[in-house]
Image (cartoon, rainbow, N blue to C red; front, side, top):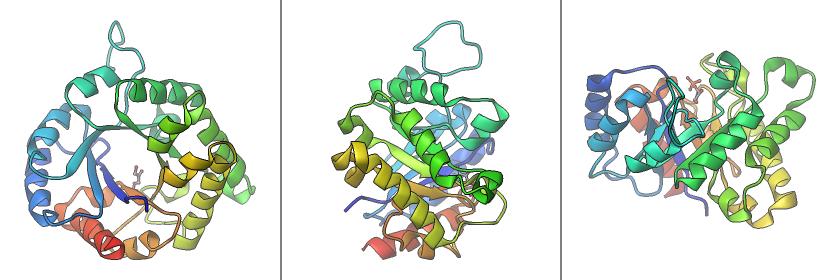
Length: 254
Ligand SMILES: O=C(CO)COP(=O)(O)O
């Protein structure tokens, strides 16, 4: 069975002190969790503080973005190598906000995925359709295209270790979620698509759902066969709601 992964994406929220305070609170609440992998992706500024504050717990730390070069004249960027040197385990790549607001392309997403894996940093690759694409029945074409582009050139072994987050763009930060069944259906489509080329990796790869995951809907979402976790935005900002999401998932997988 795939171990579910519940990961908080803090986006551009929390300064260093707020990040540390939340980790202290969260650690106490999830100390007994065994069946769920737990992660927090703070801003780049708070990465090492979160890593240190998470010490002694099973909470892993992830960045929200990287650049693919190792070092050099790339003002404003951080590299996968730098994450690895600070023992940061994960990085999100290709979040829809980065694609939409910062113009990140599928080509860049692929380069970032390669850079992450080459440095031993695990990638959480985000894919998802807009509302227009959903209405035009282009969900499958969109997500499969993004998955193919992101995973191009990786070995089957590497793909097995990637995490994909299916985040329908219209469900992010809106309070609207895809129904649990619909999220399960699209994640199943993604897994079937991966299976066509990488049958072994398809069974191992974890595919999360993201988009307004909250304590009140997490059970329904996590009870679905294909869904291997969640990438949580708003509800990951409070120890109370994020721990509730984790603990409810733990109950399902126990
Ligand atoms: O974008 C998301 C996680 O990466 C989802 O954000 P919300 O949970 O706030 O909708």
